[in-house]
Length: 584
Image (cartoon, rainbow, N blue to C red):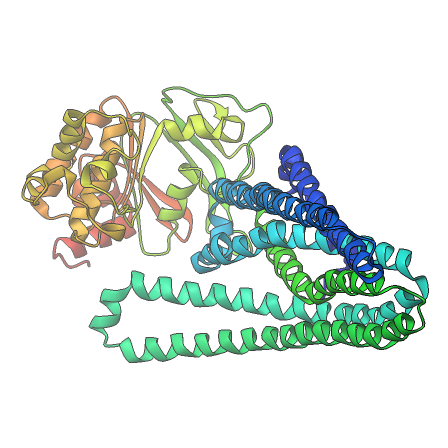
């Protein structure tokens, strides 16, 4: 569906502040453009006077040299002010691109997990590249060409009408046809270009996914299949692009054709007026010069319409992201918290956005300093509970309390600063080992980074790398093993020394010796802080203060290791299987 004209040419709220901020730059650029247009409009008048003077023999050599000097001066002014408007307006378009990119990135950082489950990385990358480029082009050349076309059209028509109104009306006769054709094709151009942008998003996502999982593709020998799928997406992209090109292919030739019809009409009727001495030869030459000036706006209609349509489509796609609101919110009167000592779950229930089946139901639990374990079968809600404790999803009020304060009334940033979270899959960056460990504390000293690495039992392996802590690990830590990635993530958590340490199956890929070393560090930290561990291996939790057993999203049992062996069939079954024992 095409965007209505009133909406298309109005500025969305996301870009209005940018235009307001740089309004003087825009004004200066437009003023320079008007000077250029005025100089261009004045040159035919000088030529007209010179030609009429030559025809009548009433012009001197000195007057001709003066006219030539004036034309050269106007040409120089055109060059200078054309540079100025390009610098001002095209520079402004780059500032629009920069500000929109910053706003888009800032909004993406504000949005929560629910949003990223609906939008692919490829789609967001396309918005930050292809769509932003289209907006930049529209706010630069699109803006200036639109203004130039309007000004030159009005001015040229007025100058032509001053020479001969009747001839001007004849020259304008084909213009309504061009306006109707442009209006008809512009709506179709919007829809087709939207298809192009959406397909480009899919293409980008396919490339990202293949590169990210390149090792898996090779192991399963899926190179040919992936190549064919990517080629299919590419063919669809080309098909959509060709559909856009068809509209452009009609607009541009049609504009030029109609402009040339106007020229043909002027040559025919204007020549007859010269023969009958209705207008002078100078008037005729000046009229044709103004017509040529009018030809550019006529031909530019298709080009400008294309740019504006592309920019409008892309801007509205970006606008959709900027209008997204995170589901995770805090109360307006939220206050910070420091060094929390207690977490209380009060009848906690949770259902993922867009789903109807609850993942957690009626969990009541009080967690205080010490080592706490969370265990259960796959799908019992362990990771979901961790993500709620890490404040990654929105929950109703009065279900989680921290130091007797509703977590929804605690500043989100201050709460997270008091929590270190190690998720199931270690999130690493294509940077050095030291930078990945210091992600939570970028200004940490090298000695502190090394201490954290030793606590996570990875210091020795880091020292075996060619550049040790300055070794770059590649995208998502591709150069590291699974155990190394997990221990690097643990080192990052150890470095921030938060009062709450939340580990979601963060030792799954760690060998037994490294696990014993890490557990000694965790137990020492748990003497005065809250440590919550989700794990499928029960051995690290034998000495835990309390272990919560989840079953189908409910808390089925709570106690220490020995108590659960005696009273929890689920815990006993898991423990016996891991220790090679048979249950009765």
